Image 1 (cartoon, one colour):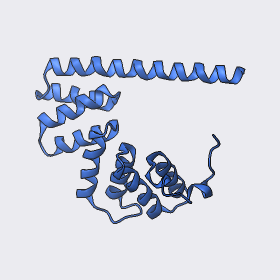
Image 2: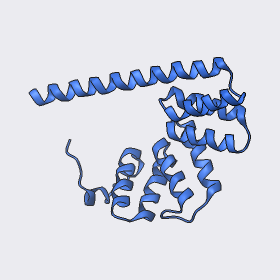
Image 3: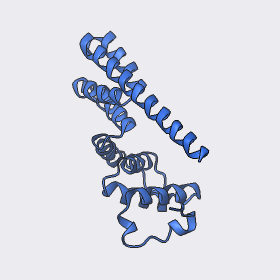
Image 4: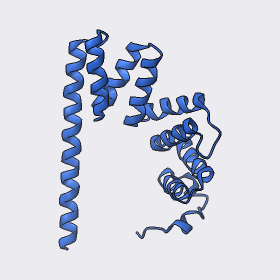
Length: 171
C-alpha cells in the first residue's frame, strides 16, 4: 500500500469522503499549505464521522478563529464531543472548563479520566484540588495509579512498535 502524495489526497472519491483517517490527512495537508478553511472543512467532515481528533481540531480552530469565524460556544461543544470520543487532551480541557465554571464534581471526573489516559497535567490539577479540599485522598490516589498504568501501557506499546520496526529493517 503506497502513501498518497498531497495532491492526490485532494481528489477524494465518494468512498474516500467517508474515511475519517484520510480526511484527517487531507486536513493536515491543507493546514500545512496555509489553506485553513479547507483544513477546517476536512476536519469537520472527519468529526461528523466520529473522529475524536477531528472533533478536537475543529474545536481548536473554532476557539482560535483559524480558517473559520471564532466561536467559543461551538468550540466548547466540540471539546465535549472529542472528550466523549476518547481524546485525552480534550478531556483535560473539558475539565478545565468545568473548573472555571465552578463545577468541581464534573471537573474531578474529567481530570480523573484524563489522568487514566496518561495526561499528567490532570494529576497536577487533581493534586491542587486535593490541597484545596474538593478532591479526596482516595480520588487522587486512584488517579495516580491509573495514570501510572496508562504510562506503562504507552511505554509497552512503544517498545513493541520499536521491536517490530527493528525486525522489519532486518528483513
